[in-house]
Length: 175
Image (cartoon, rainbow, N blue to C red; front, side, top):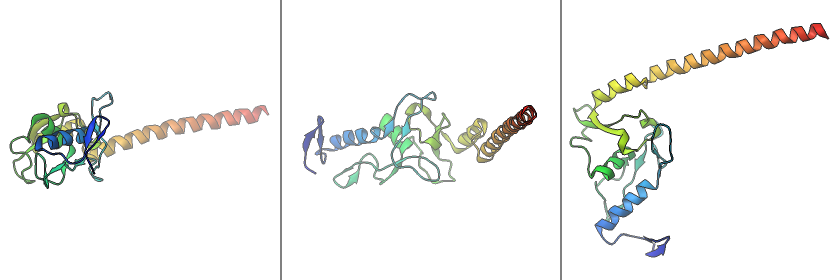
């Protein structure tokens, strides 16, 4: 791709590391939907993990190396933190099972791929597990809630069917 003016931006390979950083930030935020939502979440519209729903991002390269962190992909909410704060929280990214630091979604919408930096907090896995339970986001809690909603809908449908049948009988008597 050649360097050309297109919409006021230079297209092509960045000539300096600083240009690569700017290009990377623009590219990342272009994949974020910041439209007003009641919950204030900014939803990642790039590639997502099929199981978790969390976004992941491939950083821009400069001279063969990925910018900011030399990784081919990073979770989108982590990249939003890095772009906002300059680096990962100290201790973040340690192996699972360690006492490492994580980025918690205080909005409860990590599964929707929220990348709003205001919704991210540094914490431990233990704190996150407690919050997940308090918010009712554990799979068993979510299943119980969904089943209760279905049961309520079914009883409403039963009442409607019962009323329909009653009205049909009355109508037949009139005819």
